[in-house]
Image (cartoon, one colour):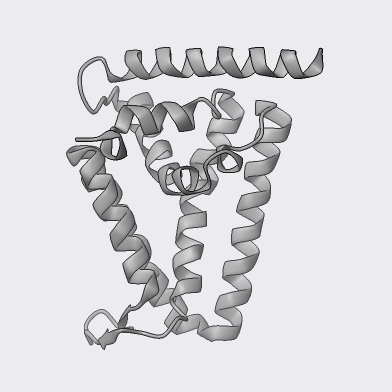
Length: 195
């Protein structure tokens, strides 16, 4: 497949901006809540249609939030079938829980909670970059790639750290080499600008 579905290229791009352990930890903690609160905000967009399952309680709202979660889920599965399937499951779970919370909180309180948590999580991201990474976030160089890859990146980080997971043999070695090369290039560019 082309570079759009090359998990190593995406991971290396994102990883080049996330090498400081505290910054990585901040992302692990706060990236999925950003995804979830975006879905909670999208819960209040007009539905395509409603499906009410009495045993589950609130209706699942098939609207922009569903489409958003589905696109992310399908992209992650296309990047890596095994980890992508887990990421897709997390996307689906976030969508279902956002429907549950959205229906119980209502528009006014739902928006207040979602925006407050969303902003807090973004502030944490910028602190991670400014204080611990010393480099601007990836979204300043490639907004779409940074926003789409962030949840998958942190999931792969956790899977690698705790289960030594790799999408394919030699993945992390290859990615580390790309990250190191990109960081060297960035350092050289930074020194050139300051001199």
